[in-house]
Image (cartoon, rainbow, N blue to C red; front, side):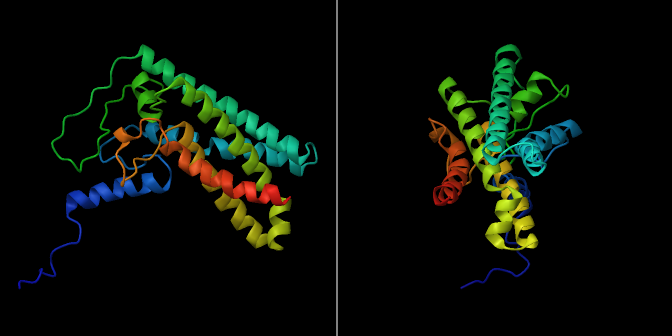
Length: 233
């Protein structure tokens, strides 16, 4: 029996490049920070802004709560309402771009492991840029449902991650800070997957997801986790 040479790599160059592009996208819930081709800087800046939007609205509500201006339930309502409004704006922008713009020209490729989203961009807020960043939903019902779920998850997440609650839970500032940071990272991942762009899951084919169930998975995990704490309270 012939043995494989120790010089043979586990992943060849094509597979390694594919993995380095797909793995961060899957972990972060959809942002494509490594495209495999030269893209304008605003593509990455726009993705970062969209990714951090839940943290911005949750941080605003948390700040008002810490200053004693709002009660905790008003804080959750404010953050959730702002996220709901943002989700509708994002989806409306995507719908407008799809209806008005010309079709994005895809570069032809024969390599099945090459990234399937090679596009040409002309401006920061152009229709082709918007359709690349925010593909949009297949159905209007999903647009409404996913937007409301985004607001609900952001509101409950803000309520759950209030600093004083974290301090009571862990009894130390260090544990509260870690939970606050990673908690908001998780919320940003779930919200991005829900209302901006869903990561291409490696174990499933997107064409089989007729009813757009995949974008719901991360937010539902967050909702179930937070609901345990809310039920306990």
